[in-house]
Image 1 (cartoon, rainbow over the protein chains, first blue to last red):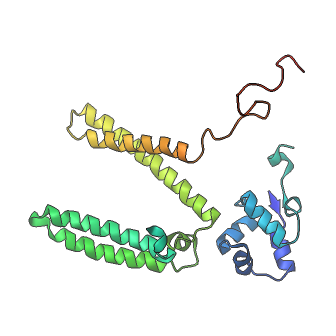
Image 2 (image 1 turned 30 degrees about the horizontal axis):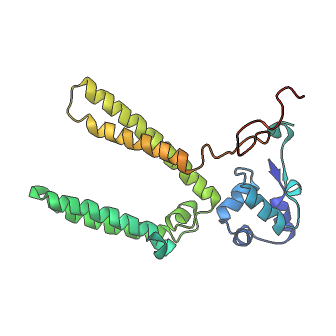
Image 3 (image 1 turned 135 degrees about the vertical axis):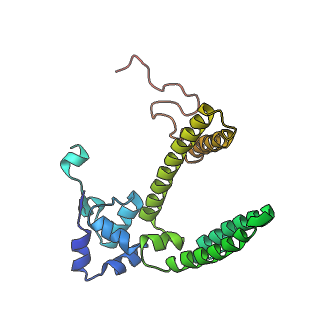
Length: 69
Length: 153
């Protein structure tokens, strides 16, 4: 699962710690999500997408094989 | 009760409580090994301070120790507990079978542990929502009967 979080965060000049504080999660979790090691829950995915003013499907892009498409 | 304790102090409080109960057990035990209770109190104080200090760190361990874990950190904790549960179950089963084979009298604590684990597991399945998936959307929720004719396409 690819995601746009790192790019969006950098565009807005936010650090991982600042994004984590805004989302109500830890900095370590932001790092894990950005690197694709952790898939956030649906509520957190929506929170992330809303924070950046995007939709969830713009924010997260499943690999076709992974998604079974 | 736990909600009255600030999050940062919860894990240290449990650590202190467990350690003091353990020390109390040695004190009640008495005999020539009564001094173990003193050692236990010292170890408990050190452990409590360590957990409190850990709770202030900006790490996954710190978040858990400080009772402020987010969803990923809680998931890690749950998976770790599940692994520990599985290993303890295997160890208990091995202990039980070994005790039976050796005709030892200490077989029953293993059985008690296994029973607690088994009932705890079943309790967890009920508490955390197994069989709460509801009825299929082509089934009447009140009667449980199909709402469509089985012969219709």
